[in-house]
Amino acid sequence: MTEGSARPRAVIFDFDGVILESTEIKTRAFAALFADRPEHREAILRHHQENVGFSRYRKFDWIYRKLFREPLDEATSRHLGERYSAMVFEQVLACPLVPGAQDLLEDLVPTTPLFVASGTPDEELQQIVDRRGLRRFFREVHGAPRGKTEILLDVLGRHGWAAAETLMVGDGMSDLDAAEAAGVPFVGREIGTVFEDRDIPTVSDLTGLRPFVIAAEPERTAR
Image 1: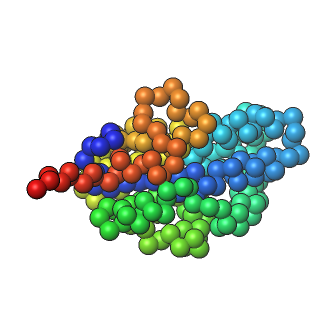
Image 2: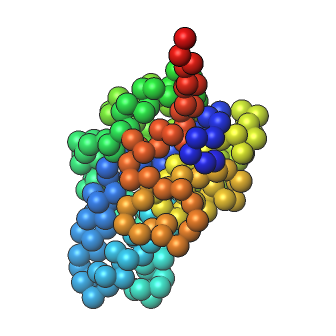
Image 3: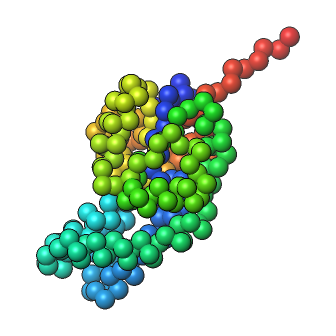
């Protein structure tokens, strides 16, 4: 999918950092969650930031196995997830939309089916979408534990769209990896240097996404 090409038949968005400006909220929460392990702070934050969009539970598992060298049982993982949710939930409800998101969604929803594929646990994600008044924009909203590749393939299969006819928008390598695995064109919302070594189109916010998802009006011939 390139700027100025035909409008996609459907657009799949990541959520944090693409629809809501919630990425930094979740980074701060990861630091707070493991504040009792200051010797691992930098490695924890680096792993979190390098794996934006992946499930928090996958990150917990990596942190315990690779950094702490300790087993992580299901009860501890669940407790970490509950504490993390408590830290971020109200802040995510209050944070701003990504610039350009409101207008773009308003313009797209009458003509283009829109979806969410997020690494946030599904139950929590559904609550946030409802509480933020965003449900009306999206045909479907999908979160973890399903991975994003699985979600993309499921959406394509059920709706009968070819991968090349759709578009995914994300801000992390998990989004790009899922799009590539499913054969779906991708536009990155670049925050920092996540995509600097990848040959993909990027935008700074959703205002910049408009040329990729809204067909240009034909020029009028003067009479």
